[in-house]
Length: 252
Image (cartoon, rainbow, N blue to C red; front, top):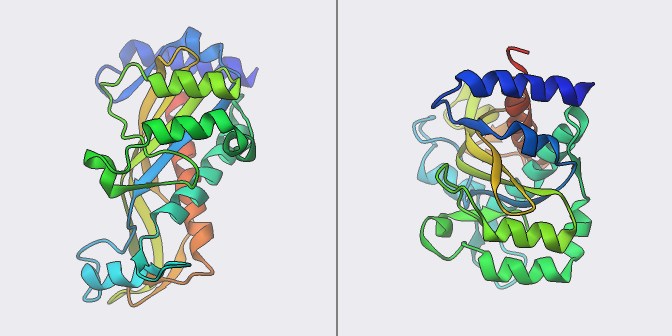
């Protein structure tokens, strides 16, 4: 019954959404049961938004960097944010829709999928060079004008699923919800593009999504409390899922 209500709402929206950034092929989406999350990208560095106080900007960016586990140097926090946000997205969509996500451990264990990551990863090319992905997944820069994806078709085949899900977070920053001068309680906000592809690699469902987390975390001098960051980052993905489902269910 839940599935029928969701896709009835989709049909209503398709008739009048025009250029709102939401598109779906109702029949094709309804035929997809098992899915795999195969790409989830965010900016390399997620830091306090510029203009958030005297300690924002460059200072906040440096505060958000952490020492690499080996080899020294500094690295961005994008991979950690993406991994935690991806978990929030799949958990929320699994609870609130009939899309059945295969376990991420199953995705990452597939040798055939690993070979596809090496072929299609865009982290070193063009706009992708400013992105990080959840570990083991490729950076895929999504655009609304991309109706077909060979990577999606190959990934669906490799993982034995009806379709695949990709998310590309184009903007993401922490901002002070309460406090000033780079210290206080921070939330996260931004924007993302969400797509579902069927097993032929055709985009059958896409939508922009707003990030504005309900969770918050303590921030000091432009850097998040490391112990609180995972819950906030996970809520980035939860927020994306809730925004998508809210849109799909409206009017129905």
